Image 1 (cartoon, helix red, strand yellow):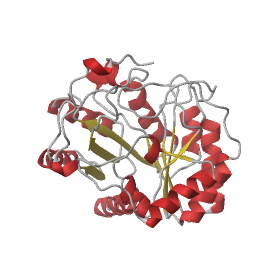
Image 2 (tube, rainbow, N blue to C red; image 1 turned 90 degrees about the vertical axis):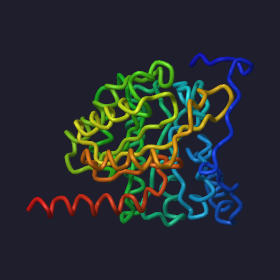
Image 3 (cartoon, rainbow, N blue to C red; image 1 turned 120 degrees about the vertical axis):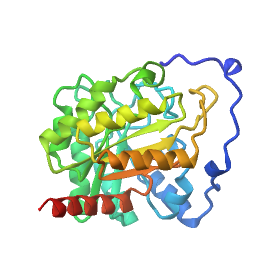
Image 4 (cartoon, helix red, strand yellow; image 1 turned 180 degrees about the vertical axis):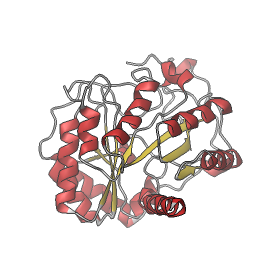
Length: 307
């Protein structure tokens, strides 16, 4: 597991600025969404990662399914998902995810997973089964996958890409210099290569990646990550504020201001991304349905301009 400082050695957490404060979830739809997930024995990254947007998203019945269990084989210093020995893969999960998507009436669904380094293919075959089940039950629903890096699992990226999700997302999470402390089980260029490989397998798929800021990165490092993503032909970039889940996780270095996020968005668009979402509360699946529609429109506009 990742080595983190004992609670007594961690600096006191700074209070959140006003622009990061959100209301506690209270809507009836929130309760209904939560009950549906429990009834179908499904996990959501919204809950497991303590997403600040859960109240807003679940009020609209937008939940991000987390497949392959609730226990990760990695121990990243930023992530609130528990680490340990995962349970056996649930063979009924693909059908349960499809049922949830149909029940919620989702036009666009985001599906993610824990890392499963214990599985020979990293869970890739299960990913394909989930995509196929959703597509069979809800043929008009567009599918966005947010996958692990499938490190050392040859062919797994190709397998999931060949199932042709509408969006293939894999987050770089932070700048290369911080990987050793923030994402020790991963490698920056492995993740970058995954994004590049997806486009080689299915050139038409939209690719997406995101990073957190406020971990101690420098502005020029963020700009270099943008350049690396564009060299890998990534279409959609998300940038959000890192929030420390517990005192045992990596501390927040600073809270990035909304004006700085606006500048990052402007610079990223100038570098050629089709879509950019950059704000303190931006997360990978935040407003993903509306963003997908804009992403599709942006590609059409770009193609029309090139004719």
